[in-house]
Length: 357
Image 1 (tube, rainbow, N blue to C red):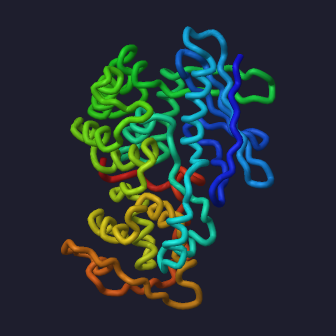
Image 2 (cartoon, rainbow, N blue to C red):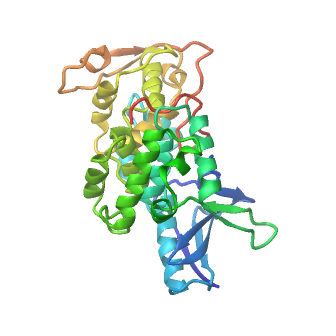
Image 3 (cartoon, rainbow, N blue to C red):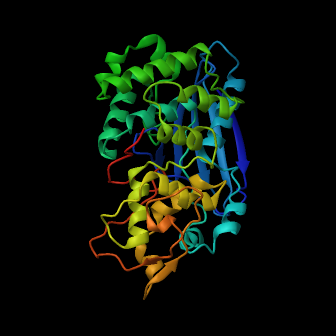
C-alpha cells in the first residue's frame, strides 16, 4: 500500500464537514473517511482537524491495480482537498459582506460556512438529478439505494474504520447500466434517461469533466441535455467546479428562507427571478450568499424590533416589492416557523427540494 499525506493550514476559519446523508462521507472519532476509485486502485481517504486548526489529509492506495498506486493516491488526494474545501479562501467574501443587513449576522457567526462539494462532476450531477422536484428525504433514499446497488464497497481495514461506499462513476453507469436500473432505484423515467445520457457523454469524452476541464464548457454541454436545467447546473457548478457565481435560485428552500426573512411569514416564497435580483448584490459570491440565507433565522435579524433591510436594486422589472426598490421591514416570525439549515453544510433541510431542474 502507498499513502500520500498533506497538512494544510486553512486560509481562514474552517470546520470539517459532518457525515453526509447519502453515506459517502463517514465520520468516526473525529476522523472523516471517504473511499474512491482512482487510476484503477481503491483509495482510502481520511481527514482530521488538529486543535490549532490545521487539517491533516491522507490518501492510501492499494497495490492491486494496473497503474501507479502513488499517482492514484496523489490524484485522489487532490480531489479530497477540493472536496473538503481546505484551500478555499473566504476572506474576500467575509470582508465584503460581514456587515450586510441580510446575511451579515450569519457570516459573523459562522464565517466557515460554505456550499458542500463533490469529488467529481458526475457525482454532483447524479445527486442533483436525484434531488430534482422531490422532497429531500425521498431524494436521499434514492441516492443511498443507487449507491448501494450500483456503487462499490470497501470493507473496513481495521475495526475502528467504518464500512465505506463510493458512488458509481460515469463509466460504470454508461457501460454497466441502462435507464431501467436507475428507475429501479426510484428515479423518475425521464431523469433516469437524462442521467444515463449524461454518463455516456462524460464517459466517452464528448463532455470533458476531468481534472483541469473548462467549467464554462462543461456547464454549456450539460445544459444542452434534456432534464438538466439551471438549478441542476448551479449545483454542479458550485459543488464540483468550485464556482460561486451560480446560486441555485430555483431551490425551494432558498426561496422559502428568503421569504421568511423578508416578511416574517413562514409560508412566504420569493419567486425565482427575484431571488436572482437579491443575490446579484453579492456577485460574484451568489452561491456563498445563498448558503448564508438558508442558514439565517428571521428572529436573528429582527432582534427586539423591526429591522429594515435595503432592497436589491434589480435591472429587470420584478413583481415582488422587495426587489422593486422599496425597503422591506423584517418582523419577528411566528414561533412555529421552522429553523432554516444550510443544505450540504449542516443537517439536511426537511422542506421539499427544488421546484426547477
